[in-house]
Length: 224
Image 1 (cartoon, rainbow, N blue to C red):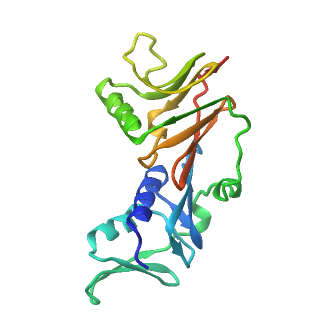
Image 2 (cartoon, rainbow, N blue to C red; image 1 turned 135 degrees about the vertical axis):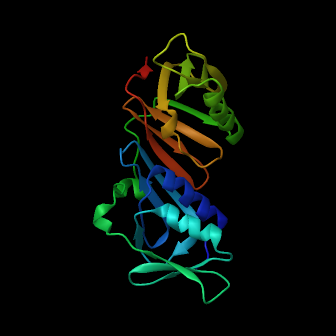
Image 3 (cartoon, helix red, strand yellow; image 1 turned 120 degrees about the horizontal axis):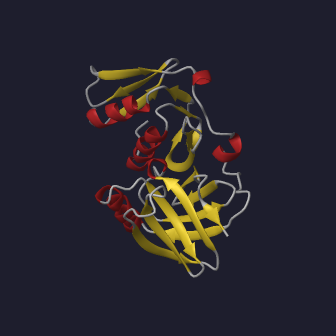
């Protein structure tokens, strides 16, 4: 099996959320962070015919990038990654599935619904890239979606310092006032355009093209 670039990109992203993964048969990948603050689900162009589990997903990603024209074979106890040369290959032993945290089935199956949707907006890949850059330039730890009763802004902020720097981009309209705060480290998403639904119950849903994330909202967020 040769993986497409899109599937590899999803695996790279998921490895940043949780280094371990269970890949089930089919074309849907899912993962959950060990802190349970991020759950991700993606529909990929490749179809896996065998179920397997890995403790260190980055090892597979590293082999796929270092072996030219890498092809994966699924053995009973390991993955075999081989390139053009039949005399050279890498083998990665499967992990014990019982040791890997997996998302609940309702997330992995795409059936979970937010308890409420109290704010909705959209942003582009370029807008989010700008926010990420500003987090570094202004030394800020959080991203917030802020409604002022008229417009919604995506902001780079420090909610614990009211006099800190801030960067803001308009991303929607609203009749509500709210401030939904996310740790920047939790916004580990594949670059792209996203629709965002936010619940005052402490969870959000980022919906992209064939990929979605459920991400925890910080407890100091406010909704009026």
